[in-house]
Length: 125
Image 1 (cartoon, helix red, strand yellow):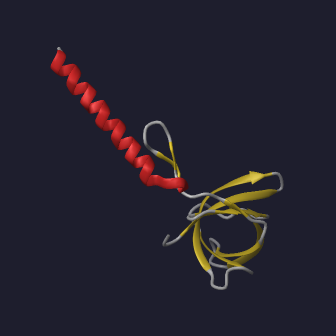
Image 2 (cartoon, one colour):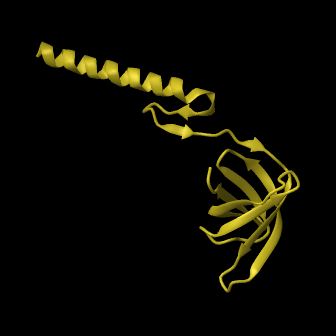
């Protein structure tokens, strides 16, 4: 019985060391839950900039709309738009601060009052 307790203690010690190492490697940009899984990989930066969004709709027509950027992280952008864009649609973003267009796709959209909140995942990041 004693060797089994020792093995369990060693396993738990190793597991705790791995979790502590993962938290140390994660740095300030990541938050970890109790199981060592990453909860958030990028901090969101609030923004209130106008953003022009362009996409091709189902019949193949080019559509453009100007929306408001809510916040930006390393991989995602939250926008407020007056029109819903279907999930997984590829979009192009352009802002006064961004000189070149940025490609993204619609991760999901939620209706909020008379507008829609879209979460866009950036390509190639």
